[in-house]
Length: 79
Length: 183
Image (cartoon, rainbow over all chains, first blue to last red; front, side, top):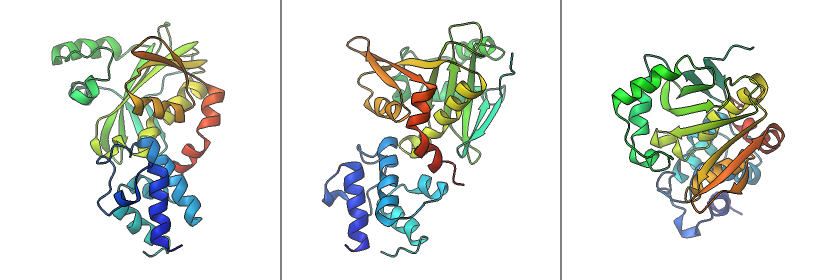
């Protein structure tokens, strides 16, 4: 599976949202299903999908789908 | 008896006990509509009432109130209190939290102050268990407290009691603590 699709799947699974909702504008505080608990599930899903260990600051900064792509680029994952 | 801590540093945040310099923040935050509507007492708090309250709690031994800082930014407040005379080795205590900074309300960081104060409660103060009540309509708080290991017992149509032992807390939060401690 392409990495972008993998990342989208992680968001769909973790937040319990539709595939079509996963766009660059998807951000916490702007989606009812993205709360602190969903954020935790999302981090678990991303680390599992990409077999990486995120730094704490990156975990906290992961505030949108666009930001997730930007952060994951630091882990040599290009989208 | 152990001294109560006035600063707690853990999980990327710092809890600083309220003092003359920061106690006014709590009144501003406490009166925000979205915070007030989740409180048992939903009345607006005047500054004069807040000052009276502050004077009554600043040297108290049965409760502590902290401002939460993340990277030097004050983002909310957390408190711990017991109905007994002293927090130290209390049988039961209650933790209250609100994140006032919108950017961090729905963030995993919102767990950090609870982890820090729960560690303090169980490991430093020797408190037996934590308990409080949550509005049934406050699903975000219910999900949040489930992640911390709280057990639920419905009280009435509006509230559920929640209770946390050290064992349940430690079992539930291993992964959360790892995420918030990597630096």
